[in-house]
Length: 111
Image (cartoon, rainbow, N blue to C red; front, side, top):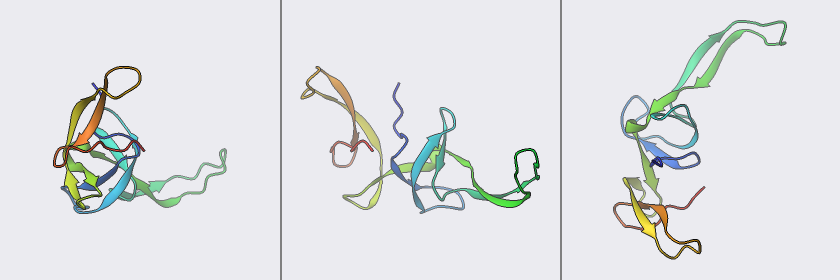
């Protein structure tokens, strides 16, 4: 099954300490977790590793967030929206499933 939120989509956070923030999905950690740019940034203590030439200290790291806490951002309305699927019959290779915004029914542009 194809996921409703993919890498490169712009999303808005619905719950948590970063509620209301927008960002681009950088990657998917697993089936349910996403890494979103600028969201869920934590301070991580890193040990020095002289073999790799890394210095120790405190670094900011973007951690994963559960996909139920984000929704895709609809630029036409400026709000969060839900994702649905439709069958596109205009595709040159037959039928193809496309993602659409639930509120307007327009196709989500692939990043």
